[in-house]
Length: 293
Image (tube, rainbow, N blue to C red; front, top):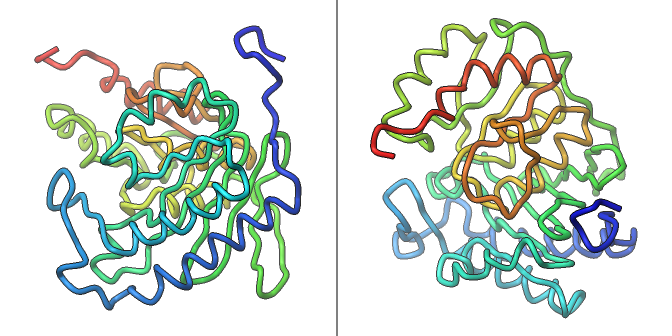
C-alpha cells in the first residue's frame, strides 16, 4: 500500500472479465469500425479542434457500444470515453478519485482512419485512482491485441490463432543510435524548431499519428522511445502501463511519476533508464517556460 492512496493499487479484473472486455472490443470493431473503413461519407467526418483533429461516425458508434457493455459489467465504474469527454470535459476531474475507471479511445489514429490508412487501433485501460492497472491495444485490421496488467508481462495475443507471445523492449543504446516517435505537431509552436533540430542527433525520429501503434512498436522492441505531449488518459494510460510491463522506463519528462489524471507535461518512455536520461536531457527545452508564460 502507498502512503497517498486509500488502498493497494492492483489489477481488479479476473481472467473471465478480461476476456469479456476483449470480446466486447472485437465486436465493436467488427460491427462499427471495420464496415466504415474506407467507406466513410464526408458527412460521417467532422472536425473537433481543427482539420487534423477529426471524429467520425465510427468513433462515436464504437465508443457508445463499448461504453454500454462496460456499464453492464461494471455499473459503478467511471467511464472515460474520448468522444464523451469532448462534450463533458468535467468527467476528467473525477479521474484521480475514482476507485475504478475505464478509458476508451474507440478509434485511435482517427486522422489515419479517415484517410483510409490502416494505422489505427482501439485503446482501453483500467485505472485505480489515476494509476493504470490494465491496458489493452487492439488492432481491428489484424485482429491482434497487446495486453498488460500491473505486475505481469506485456503480451501480444492473436485470438483467432490462439497464439500468445511475451513482448520486450529493445536494448536501447547511445543517443545517436535511438529510433523513436516524437509528436512534433503536438508540441508548442515556439518549441518545434528547437526540437526538430535534435533529429539529426538521433538515428531516426518520426510520428505515426497513432499512439496505439507507437506504443505497440515500442513494447515489441521495434523502436527505442516514445515522447508524448497533450496528455489524455485514453491515449496514454494503456501505453504507459504496457511500456513498463515490457521492461521500459516510464516517467514524465520532469522525472515525476505518470498518472492518468495529469493533463499537462510530457510522457517519455524509453527502453532503458540510461536512454531515458539521455533523451530527457536532449528534450529538456520542453520544460523551459515559453516566452509567453
